[in-house]
Length: 329
Image 1 (cartoon, rainbow, N blue to C red):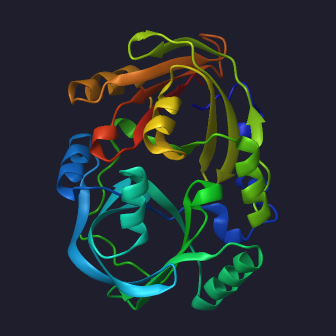
Image 2 (tube, rainbow, N blue to C red):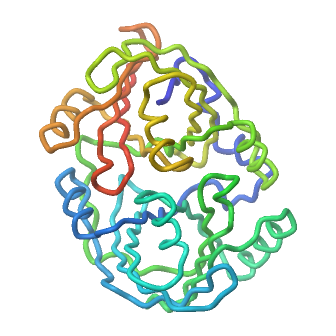
């Protein structure tokens, strides 16, 4: 959750976080999300107001995975989650990063991708990272209809807890424009659960991002699966562009964070959306089969800067939870 009123460091400027790192890391351009059945996933998110915008079908992609060239058969589809492009990948056959992730972790967000302005800049960044000990996990070179598209995935998951993706080239825009986000939702957070904040912070600092700022906010009105909660956690913070990155270290439970660690291991846990009426969204999503499984509040109730958070159980449609956030002006 975001405890903005309790720690201004969580709301630091994009420039302060990207200091010392290449400028290309100021904004995530797309997310690679691995699933078992795109049709089922797309139908579930469409009910919540996030429809599939483009279905590429089952395609054979020429990949070089861990240095070995081959063809990965995958089903691919595109959606938009309040401004960030989402690409769902359903592995069918062949060795690939997507198939490996699904086998190891199950469904979920595998990579967060950043656009690089040119092939030369991409080569330079790969070389820079290689000099820091960061190898290449997978490369993909295709003609996406508007010239060459190159996607390079770095081997960052073990220590960094997600795959860092770099892309150059253009994916044709979907034929259908994304509708306005339901309830005026605004994507405000990428969140990952880890077992050691310092180790993860040290890793990304080595890559060129600054050290995390760590907080231990006091929260109130705790609920876990409809009952009074006793969970506690430390939070690490980064910021890229307009979206905050939250790193969660569970300290006490039961909690949805430990549930995730037990079921999937470390990695991407939730997307967070700022909403104007958290109760209306929670009620609507519960009716659609995605109840609130954890919630709470921060700050002094009724005072400016206070707020509430609520986790909707959307794991049945892709393995990722959604956190609803509301802050009092």
